[in-house]
Structure formats: structure tokens, C-alpha cells
Image 1 (tube, rainbow, N blue to C red):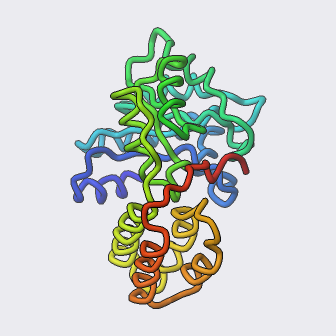
Image 2 (spheres, rainbow, N blue to C red):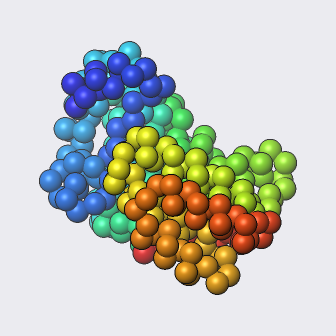
Length: 258
């Protein structure tokens, strides 16, 4: 991990973020990701050595604990702060919950309000609108909010939240034509960074979600998620623009519960 941090530093990122929150079985069961919450001594030691090895600010993300009987996020938060991290993101679920049910933010507020907590605390879990972000800022007193799954297929959610926090007004959802512009840019970046064929395969779920709520869209969606020719996919996106143009689908959160 120290060597990885040194390698990452060469790219001159703003921060190096340590993910102690990943709940995926193949990661957590071998002690990585949220599995680190079962070993606070190692988590603290690793974090301290990474902080000392790089000049880039180090942040971290974690969960409430391993399961309902082991919610040790307050202890871990204080130890990570002592190890030198500059900010902490807390996801309001245990590892055992994965992404099921509703995120619990009460412990996030407890960490934030602890008299020894000095670093910024960022809350994460279930935020899917500007209204909800504003309400959670007010109720839980966090320094920031992180949006995860709600941005998949809806990357404009950050603009929506920022606009609501600044003005108290809800932006209308983007038109199909605006979504096509975003989808094309996303697709170009996917091909640039992941190349063929992976750049196409990994875009398929995004394409489906970008146009969720468009009526009678199934034939075009099937073409989008089966075509393997980049030029033909771009042409399909333009066809979608021509057919649906100014239509504004509603923004249902695609990942309400799993």
C-alpha cells in the first residue's frame, strides 16, 4: 500500500483516498476493504505509514462496522484521524448490509459531533436529490456529502444537488438530447481509457440508465446494449436524439434498494 501511494503520487492527484468501505465478498472476506474494520490495529498502522510516505493529503472511506453487533466506526474514525488522514467519508451501512435497506446516519452524526473529532466528516448513503442532500446536511451536520450509486446513469445529479443547495430550486431533468450529449462524451472517454471491447461492454448499463423512462425505448435499448461497433453506436445515439429530442424523462433513482 505504501508503494502504491508513492506510485499514485507521481500522477499528482489532489488526494489519495483509502477505501476501507468496499463490502464485496471477494475483497472483504480476505481482510481488505471493509474487512479492515475487523482489524483496527492493522488499519491504523497501514494508514499511518501511507501518510508518512507521501506528501499528498490522505483521506479514507469506511462503513459503520462489520455487522449490527460490531459498529466500531467511532473508534476507527478517531484512530484514523490520529494516523494523519485529512478527511473521512462514512457510509451509513455495515458490511453485512451491503447496499440493502436504508442507510443509518445517526452514527455518522455521532462521529462528527465527537469533541475529539477535528477533521471533516463526509456522509454517504442513499442521497439521490438536492432536497435530500440539503435535509441531511441540516440533520446530520456533516461537512460534505458523497453520492455513489445514484450517479450511475445520472451523472447530472451533482449539478442538480449543487443548484438546489445554492438556490433552493429543483432543476428540471435533462432532455433526451442533453442526455445524448452526455452519453456520447462518456462513451468517448470509455473508449479512450478502456479501449475495445471493454470500453463498449462497460458502457452498456450506463446507456440503459441514461434513457430510463423514455417511452417505447426497448428496441433502441436492445441495439445499444448489443452493438459492438463504436461508429454504429454513435449513430444510434443520434437516432435517439432525432426521435425523442426535447422529451424529459423523470429521474427515478435506479438503485433504490438491492
